[in-house]
Image 1 (cartoon, rainbow, N blue to C red):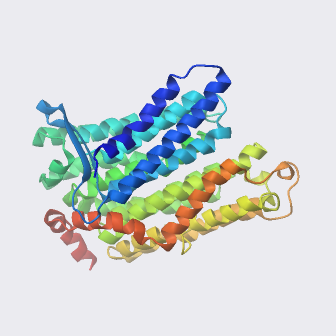
Image 2 (tube, rainbow, N blue to C red; image 1 turned 45 degrees about the vertical axis):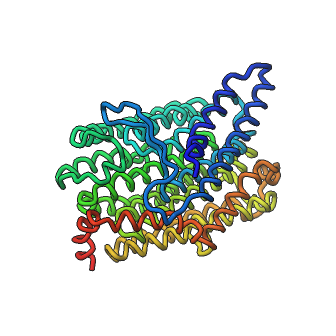
Image 3 (cartoon, rainbow, N blue to C red; image 1 turned 90 degrees about the vertical axis):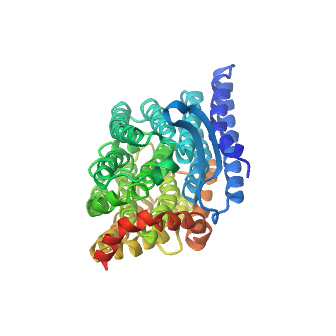
Length: 502
């Protein structure tokens, strides 16, 4: 294993962004070159992340591809990066979706293209750095750094309400992060280090665990988002350009769930057991509330945004079942949801970009004009509602298996996401795709182009792969989950909850 591989995957996008930033020439030449440099950089980074996946050994406990260097040694802070089975797949998700976002924005982003590609590559660096950080200060730096390209891409290239959406996104996330900073400082004061593996072995008093976990829940609950910290989501997802929405919903929201798992469930098991009933309740509320609101939407993109919020509620439930099955299901659901929701946003963009409207009422019989889109769209709609044979089914099924150990009603209500999702997604698909061949905007539609297929086909293949052969993903992170949950301290903390459930 070559530790430098992880550094290349982390910082190569930063190099690509710098190369784009330094380009000179005519406006048109710079725009074209920016797109190609961003594409080839992101494809190379994805290829290197696949090499890491191939060389990774899931049966080896602990972190691999580890790099550590002094940073602020006198304060117990170091540059410490590495991956385990959990973080590896989130790195892969980030590097997989970035080139799709570049291709997807080829025609959708037409102004200040160079700046946009720089922001997109910067976002990739911050995401990979976030998922591979093994020092809490380093994690916090990368976590906060995602705000800069994320909010800029919403505020500069978004829709009519982009400035308001960007401000909401920034202020909500930045405000939540202050609670993480306070928790970080408290942990450093008590232990003298911010090294995550060392902190995992530290034994905090149960009362202190509760305060620390509350800080992390508030910080990561905004990014997830956890009900009722979701107010920024509909506007941010709707106003952002589609490639940005894909990165926000496909990867950035997963940073919140990843943080809850890494710094909540696994680091503070005593507090997680006490918080579990409340987080499970909030997760169920999110599932049902967001599904009902989604059904009332008239904007296709806003409907998909609420669908994403609903499915993130299922992920919150899976994490706080505090069982290996539930956590496995939550991780699997995060990965499959990241791919599926990205594809759905690009399907909406394919129609709305041609028709120059996202209103559901403006469409009828699109399948007659765009049969390839209708076929791929049906696959992603079915995947989104958890049809067997797709990745989402495996994730939701494992979450329900974990939830049934805690409460039948939690499992039943969380599982209702399949039924409620089927209602609003099939209503959307029927109204847009079927019916009499539409006049007006629909009559002018043409089917998918090569770049659009280059985005949607890989998403379709991964969705089917995750549903048909889930073991190829589960075998990577399941040993890490089982190893973490079976640790004596975690078992002792969770035993009362499991006994109560039985």
